[in-house]
Image (cartoon, rainbow, N blue to C red; front, side, top):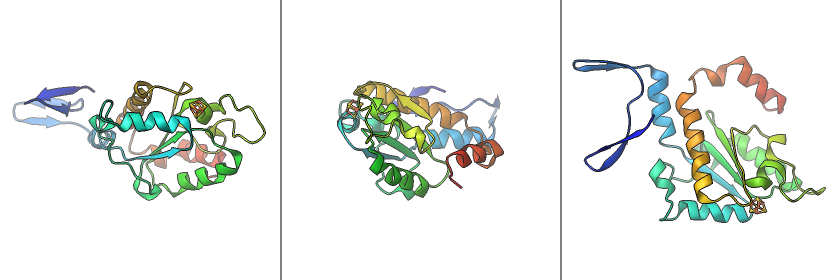
Length: 185
Ligand code: SF4
């Protein structure tokens, strides 16, 4: 789904559907997906250098607002995208997990940078070797640090996931089984 220009304003293109004279029909899944993907509320969980790249991503030059994600939330209950950026010490693992658990469904997770995704260069006893050991991750952004363009690319991939997700996915046995593997009810 691409954006189109209308009177100099970029608007999201309508989803696939059936069109005729004076009508357009599509499925609820697609309309909800379109609305969700263009109004993500990210929660930045930034612990170190990758967080600085995120600050640049939010700045005027890269401007995440262009993707409908300028409204950051520091309350997990009012966020639907957890962005983990930086080194996560094992001591911080339970805090990250609690933040994830406090987010309402539907929720997505973006792991930004080598540290969040795999522990990065810190192959030590004190650093979590990837946040996917404690919470499920939807998209990984590689790099140490990733540039703002890569973070935006990760957001676009999350948007693709959101736009194509079935409304029933969160109630499916597969999704519940995946959460159960993490010990999350
Ligand atoms: S991946 Fe690199 S830039 Fe990002 S937090 Fe780790 S050490 Fe810092």
